Structure formats: C-alpha cells, structure tokens
Image (cartoon, rainbow, N blue to C red; front, side):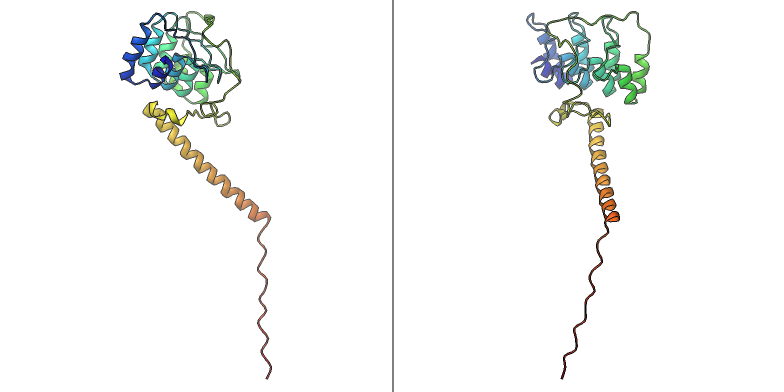
Length: 222
C-alpha cells in the first residue's frame, strides 16, 4: 500500500503517505513481492522529491536497499533517470553509501555518466564526510537480483535507455514521459531502417530473375 502511494508520487498523495508513516505498524523498508523494491526506491525512480523527503525523514528508512529485480539502490534509480533533486536529498543522508555497485559493477555515478546526466554526476562527485556501511534489515533485500530485468526487462542493456512499464506511464513526471515517448519513436524508426537495410541487402545479393521473353504468336497459314 505504501509502495503504491510512493509510486503515484503526486503532491496530493504526499498527505496519504504522511498519514501512513504516522502508523507504528508501518515499516518503510518492506519491498513489494514482485520487484523487490522499497517505497523509497519507487519514489526515487519516479522523481518524486516530496515523497522521498517524507520517507527519508524516518531514521529507520534504509537508503541503501537493493531491489531484487535490477540490483539497484534508490540512488542508482534516481541517478539513472536524472532526478537531480532526488539525488540531492538522498546524498544528504549520512548513512547513504554511494559506492554500492549494481550486478554489472557500476555505481550510481557511473550510471549517471552513462546517461549523460552531467549535473547529477557533478553532485555525486562532491566529497562526503564518510562512507557508511549499508543498513542491515530483515525487511530489505539482502543483495542484488538476477540482473537488469523488468521495467520492461529492467533497463535495456545495450542501448542503456531507461524504460518503465506503460501501466505506470501516467504516474511519471512530464520529463520522463517525454523521454519514454522519444525512446519509443526512435526505436520504431530504427526498426524500420534495419528492416529496409536487410531487404535492400537481400535484393542486392539475390537480384530478382529477369522476366522470360515473350514469343510472338506465329502467323496463321492460308
């Protein structure tokens, strides 16, 4: 329930999250069973600073929780998506460990650089007072998952373009929506180009046979 409210992320939902956080029986570190992502991870991925701020106000919130789907921390998700304000909020937590690596051995800084989020990368290169050890909690996934899958096969590994489930499209920020639409349009264009190339290549290697000559009919005798 809390995870879904965090993913919705609209300002009108911040009050709902605040009410949930006031309950003593609410654990902010419980991950969903499908993708193994905590509420903080969902909010960080969506770029919802207000929700992230509310969750980080709880001292028991683990900012280093790895999801089981991608092996990403909330900081990695925010850095990948280019959410500077969320990265800044996370970076202010003293118990944050920015040097945790994903299953491919990349940190949040490397993910930001790979996506050309220069401002996020500059923020992540600022010196920190300490490099803490990730919090241990029975409610948090203990390690990275089987790799980058989900989020429409997690993140497309070769193109390194972030994608999210279309069912969550309306909950994303306008910037993220524009990025997704541009990515889908570009994918369609590239697919058409590749198909045309192979058709051209096939016709070049195996040109069509010339039509058989037509024999004119013989004139009738008599």
